[in-house]
Image 1 (cartoon, rainbow, N blue to C red):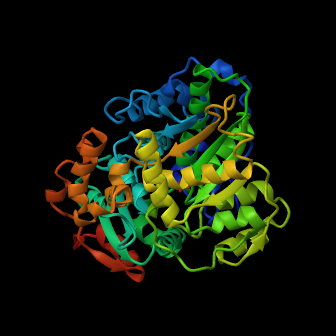
Image 2 (cartoon, rainbow, N blue to C red; image 1 turned 45 degrees about the horizontal axis):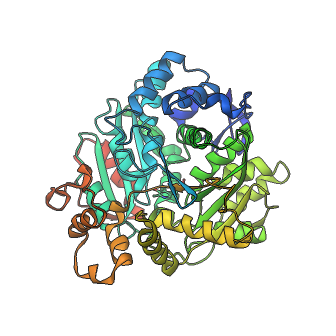
Image 3 (cartoon, rainbow, N blue to C red; image 1 turned 60 degrees about the vertical axis):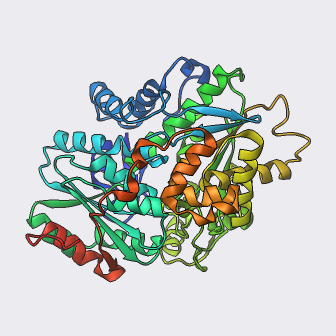
Length: 499
Ligand SMILES: *Cc1c(COP(=O)(O)O)cnc(C)c1O
């Protein structure tokens, strides 16, 4: 299996090379040159646990890793020390709809699925290539990637990780989680700008040849843990197959089509679902759920992609994105005709038209709808969801409405065929979640609300967040977007960074 750049066909790399590189030299993203078909019927996968599903799938894409290497990476990533759920990605049925919970990893968000394995795939790749350069993982984060990447890469030999987050664009809990992160190779900076600003600047640094040469002279090389790295996207396909198998085990007929409702930001999660569909998994619709930054909804509604618009800060910060980086991979897949023109417009933030593929449908949720959904699902079903999952829940309701609620996507016979992807634990967004349940929680701070949430749900505060309030803040620095390059140089230089 070879990987080619979305912007040109000249660079056909092997899996391990594409993973180390992160982004192609021409600025494009790596995509599989061909999509392997599953070659089997889904029911043959039913007896598999998560790790067996992962091996079955990764083996088809990461063809220059040996089976033993893949097993080593998979078992290191997915085990009882890294995930609190034995099933890794369990399904909970709530009123006929399946919630696929991807939030049981170390940082309680779906990013952990890919970021538990990416550092392992990367270090394995470096060893294979005899590459001794220190990998500098530059990461822009809208909140969850940062902490998950820090958790995945901290103290990994041969790597340094530098995370940039929008200073005012993440939750209090997310921010404290990142700024208190220990690890000798860990560096975290707040950025005075939004996520798109930070992401564009990181992309620019990746492509700055002068900078690359400068750091190479000192034995460093940039790599990426963002979802532009194909080594994140492919492990995300696994849970689509795993979820389908769980539904068969629950009584669904093998071959029945299902819908996945995906809370979407950078378009990485849902794109993995699209790839799974292309491989032959029986998915009818991929329902793209957006918050009020509804660039994708507007595209799926009208066929015009237009990211130039005001940016909204919402209660689902990991979806506050106007330029979803993985959209480039969809454009590549759909447009062999005038691909270049469209990709240029995409990166220049100019609008363009592209026929809407029938695999997708988009819906969006307002902030008020998100709050209502959190309250409704908890009051009716005693199931507490985070704001991102609530956006998906609203999209699910609108989808059912659009399809005739009584004609019944959720009605009997269709039980569980709609799968909402639950991307974060409500504990990460305690303020929004608790005040959605009852405005009287407004008087407490985020840290008190962790305790209150445990009381209300008769659960317990996850160990990751115990004592978060009093943990020492290590990374205090906030910088301008134009200071990101010098921050990187300082981290890599002989003068210690003054974070
Ligand atoms: C990253 C993230 C998303 C968005 O996923 P994309 O792959 O960027 O579309 C949704 N919810 C949560 C909690 C996330 O961390």
